Length: 380
Ligand SMILES: Cc1cc2nc3c(=O)[nH]c(=O)nc-3n(C[C@H](O)[C@H](O)[C@H](O)COP(=O)(O)O)c2cc1C
Image (cartoon, rainbow, N blue to C red; front, side, top):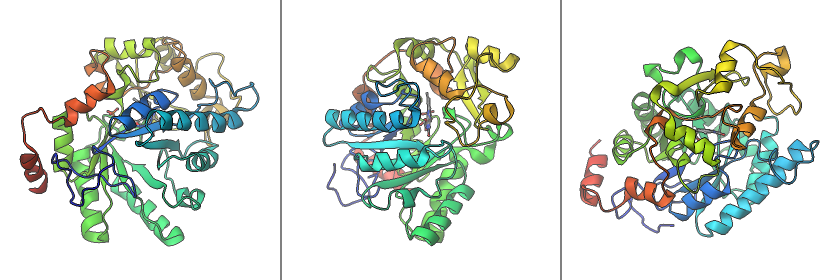
């Protein structure tokens, strides 16, 4: 962790302070479920100087704790295991847990994350209105909502301030036009010019600084791949970037080899939108499962665990079991499972180490000097 007092690191990057936690680089690895970012990836990113995020969704299913009947209990135990393993890999790093509001056991996963030592909780797939309540005994745990619009950020801030006298420690802005997994927009709005990073990041930065007069860093997510992408986000006023897809094709990523291979072989035509039973679109790689889905509800899908607060499979028998589909993908069934990805999946050409990704983004060996970077970012 850094001691520096200014708003920049000595290398000229924005100093990303998330509550009491400051990673070496202004980089958050996005939570990726089910078990695409568990302790392997999160621990490696945290060790390399970013924020490493464990996706808490559905961890129990494929854990040793699952008996077939104790899904929610197994989720808690498996999350505790993953946090402990990530901490072991990165004793001084910053470990976050991603918790999805849409899940039935949202509160229990948030409480487990805080109790077991996560330093940051990042929460989206719905508005995390009660997050401060669930973590009130852990004031050092930084709270970071994920939004796709300024309107959503306003609602969260208003409610947190009124009910809990607390503000977010950072806000992730996720652009549905590029990001992976569930997208925070209706299908018809996914590619709307109103929901791009270029539109939302500067507007939110302005709202926080000029209107609210608070210093809350905005973290840009969705389509960040290169150093140039990160620079562009910083020039928009972002204090950090969150990256998911690029981390999938790393040796340390917890996805099976076959899943990573799907990314390596994908072309941009293979990247599609699917309708999730949660009521949101998701981005995924075309495969036998998505083709079947396009033709109608797949066979053999019944709700057995009640994992979602609102699930179209449970309420009106349409759609599919997303827990089953994502767990199948994690187990390597790449034709029978759902392969979530961001629009940059087609750019993955090789498997590399996490430290190489971070070096490529923030390493010293590249063209611009620290002074030039600071100047470029400050000029805006
Ligand atoms: C395979 C995959 C699974 C994901 N799962 C989750 C999740 O469980 N929770 C969440 O909030 N976001 C999830 N995301 C979104 C990422 O955390 C990240 O914010 C987003 O993908 C950033 O865009 P990028 O992939 O273009 O870098 C997922 C993304 C991918 C690619």
